[in-house]
Image 1 (cartoon, rainbow over the protein chains, first blue to last red):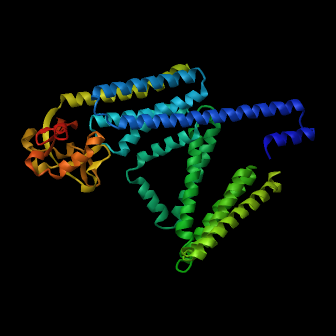
Image 2: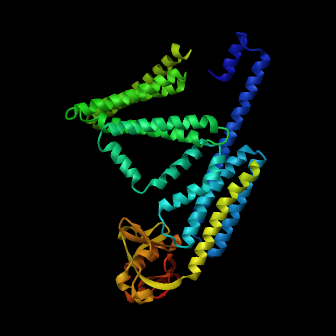
Image 3: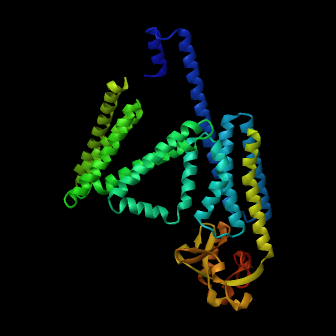
Length: 324
Length: 141
């Protein structure tokens, strides 16, 4: 039901007055316009910034290195000052635009310096410099995806074979360490959430950390499920059962927490993920069937059935006592 | 107070980048010029993006340019998966021509060499790419 319909119902039921109804509608209209405006500024910032990076990276033959560097630093200084001006004059949309532009321009400048002096540092050195120098701009940004992006860049500093070791540890064998890693990610996410309660007015970095850690926990859980839970029913029954138990326990735990916190969206998301996982479990045993015409028809029908199940699940959750 | 902190936070990255550029410029201008021979490290990825990726051919390099006639191999380039990898950035439009020329590098007219600015203890910085003893731009005109 749209907000306007809900407001009309509430007005008819005399839950709110006509004046309150008008005020709520006006507030929501303004908020929607603000969100759209901010998103547009963020997208514009990304496009312009990436364009600038590409122009700088194209290594113009016609311009000498001094002119290129002077031009780049002038632009960088201008962007930094404009960002500062936007923040001090409380221009929220423009702040997002120039924050992203400044951050991307720092990356472009590092690239240009590397290009001019023929530096042979790899991604590791580049990411270190970019993440550290760009930190002030990430701290002031209120765009969550930008903060998450910065965290990914920051964690790529540890890319000297560390990630390979972590993935080997996670997916080469299924043991208590694998489960502990997922639990650690959940704990890190919880720590991020707690930190966000204090830091939220100043920066979104703890919130971004919370989200990233939880996404990684989900990825790891599905990694475990797909690697160990869908195969080996005939050869490694114990491991397969245990892997599935871990996946379902994780999803059930998330649903339990969602009920405790009255978070219907989280509950619905996890319920749907559980259904998808069950579907994958069945589909993984029908891989040969999918290689035929009948298999394609069966696959299409299965997807339709899955959509129907999702709808029924959503409807059921909406009417659950726990969320009333 | 908040404005001042913000101003300092925003100025710091700019100052760092300018200082880094000045340091690199000083290092480049105050080193001794040395000439080293070049060989490809991986024929599939000779021209990757906008730079030439190569290894130094120490067997063909004159080590008398260096102190005690010893080539300081570890001071040049970055340690990579397939040995020490070096880079020289070129405009993309010349990438194909340079690639073709590099395949003929055993011909005396198209030998590839790089002039480095070398400062003992501080490493080396590529300054110029030479093809057959001339600036690379002359060979790709």
